[in-house]
Length: 189
Image 1: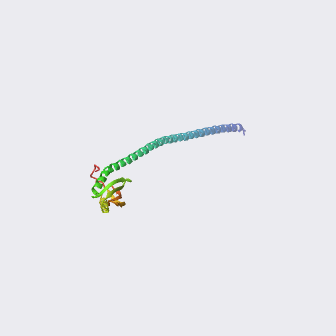
Image 2 (image 1 turned 90 degrees about the horizontal axis):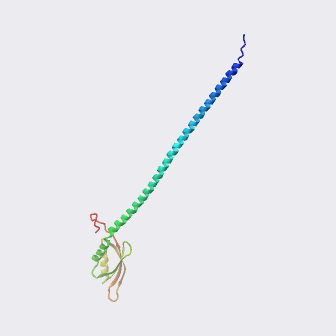
Image 3 (image 1 turned 90 degrees about the vertical axis):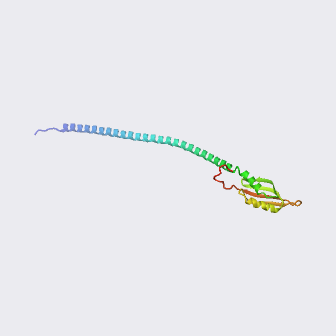
């Protein structure tokens, strides 16, 4: 039998296999590096895209907050205007009140009673001072004023009879009231 020495062939075969393995490992490492770099780049792109979206949302939120402040300012202006309109309407409704008040006092004043002063203490409280020929005339005045649409709750604060001439001086407290306005009447009278 012939002897064949296979050691150099095995050695060569082993070197080729090691070389192929090294190339495969290098290729796998290169491929893994490329995949890792691609994944990292993909993740960075996603993060950048999300940051852009967040920035755009922050910009829109800032714009909306400015618009909200403008709306709040307009709402405050609207409320101020409505309050002014309400005050003007109240003043407009009360404008003929003085005329009605004097008309009522003149109509309800009985003979023998004379007014010397009439003061408005608050928005709806009046103090009336006067002189009367007798206490009965003051009582008649109080009854007449109690039946008025514009005056109510007459209360006598002071009544003093004059010693020499018999004429009484009196002081009445009254409350003004606004009768229910007629819906059909727009002229305020």
